[in-house]
Image (cartoon, rainbow, N blue to C red; front, side):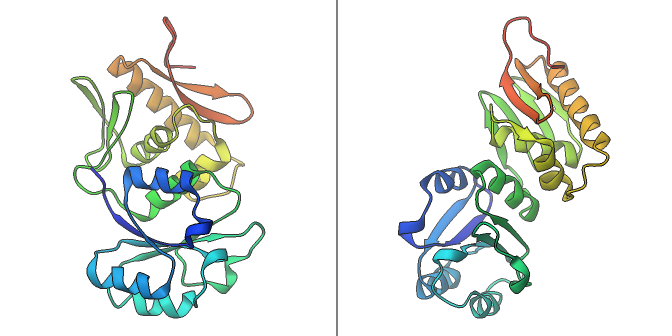
Length: 226
């Protein structure tokens, strides 16, 4: 079940198909290359977040955002910026990413702004996460998750088999760039591994030493505590 509707302000020639495909798995995505089309969507759709590709946008985003809020004052605004661009001139934005970024990184950042709705499920190879309910499920078994555990597990399920760095996880799950003490992350990884073992699910959270972790299918005889 898709949770929220996102309005993506981007020129078609600049649209990254990989990013669009990743967004479309979890959200209803409306594409608006012009201000006129964007306003038309806002007049007829319930939009939870506006995602703006700043380099390709050809209208004043500050004025647009002021007008957009009339349709939904709780709407969020997220900017995609060129590499090295400062967001200081866009204080109205709730969050941003600079190029280069991966689709999985964008999904994790959006998940921080858009709370899960009842019925939202993220899944990979039969391993399912009931995001709002806070349960990890495998076949007929389920284990409860705290809100932070669920957000962390969602990050891995949205980017299976991809290495997620410790820095990315600290930023996307806890909203901090501080890496002086990552024991909180270590403890949450331990809890997720314990949950997978409790479910007897054939998956592992593998440690990529010096980098981070990734979710993989377990090989025969492989433990979840990798």
